[in-house]
Amino acid sequence: MKLAQRLCEERHISLQDMAFIGDDVNDLSLLRAVGFSATPADALDYIQQEVHYVTKKQGGQGAFRELVEKILSDSGLLQSTIESLLL
Image (cartoon, rainbow, N blue to C red; front, side, top):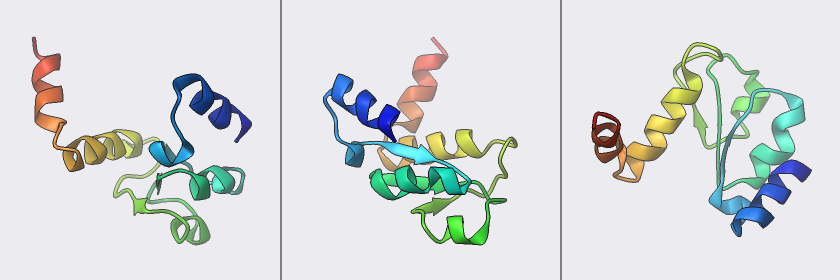
C-alpha cells in the first residue's frame, strides 16, 4: 500500500485513478482502495467478492492481459493501441 501511495504522489494521481489486480489476503487493502480492482478466476471466493472484476483467465494464464484489454476496451482505446503497436 505504501508503494502504491508513493507512486500516486510521484505521478500526481489518486488511488481512485489506479487499477490493481491481486489474488490474496495481502492484496486486500489495495484492492479496496483503488478505483478499479480485479482478481484472477482462480482467486479465493472472498477475494473475488471484494473486487470490481473477476477475470475469466486464471493467474499466470493471461489474467493480467485480460484486465489490460478490458480497461483499454472500456476506455475506447483498445483498437488504437493495437494499431499503434503495429507501426
